[in-house]
Length: 282
Ligand code: C2E
Ligand code: MG
Ligand code: MG
Ligand code: MG
Image 1 (tube, protein in one colour):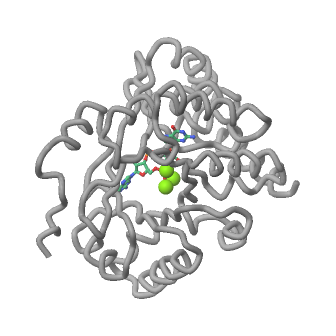
Image 2 (cartoon, rainbow, N blue to C red):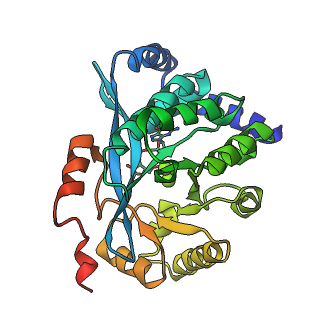
């Protein structure tokens, strides 16, 4: 309970300091109509396999083309959607759209979709997942669900049941932003994740901190022992990419390799002959 109370106080505080209350109300009203008005769009960021140096899949990242405000960042509207429950219709749209789009890609490419804790509570998620796969025809193995540690903060069995159901269908489950929560390690015992995504903050600081390199190495070693793969997030330079290859990270994602892009651009990248990263020559 204490943790939840703390979160609410923090949110209240945050609303007070930053986003004006009126602004927040307006955004919520607009967000209610965003799905129906077709204002949401998925961008796709490539994830590269560091063994083959080729694209292994894309992460779907939602964008909101607001009629007057322009592009609104998910960092600004996902929290609002979570607080109001709008995350359920929004998340359902994201999942269906990501599956529909990825179904047309070559069969070896996967798509990763971010989930908020609230989407996994109650009993609605299983049917939504099954329907998204069935409608799109996407093989379950090609879908990855990304959840943060916050998902396991709740004591609810629903959440674990939903994740187990997803895994039993063949869907992959990744722990996102690993290392940023309060007790990351204990969560690894609570659910058999397929993949750990190492948070950008660790990856970025590898450039100037030997301690950070040690931490990332330890995470990769731990993941290997637990039969999980690793994706480094926020790779912005060749130097970082080379380090990650050297220490045996499985995959990398970041601006150096490719920014999140509209579906048409992702399509072009997939079908361009030269999609391997430049280090491939090594
Ligand atoms: P995330 O899942 O950890 O996604 C990675 C974020 O890092 C994305 O921000 C991406 O654009 C950004 N990023 C990728 N490479 C780099 C890099 O090299 N440098 C830097 N500085 N940033 C990089 P984005 O798209 O703004 O999304 C922010 C967060 O919003 C996501 O973090 C995720 O937690 C959430 N989110 C996005 N789409 C969805 C969604 O459809 N559903 C839910 N529930 N959450 C979403
Ligand atoms: Mg993610
Ligand atoms: Mg992340
Ligand atoms: Mg994040």
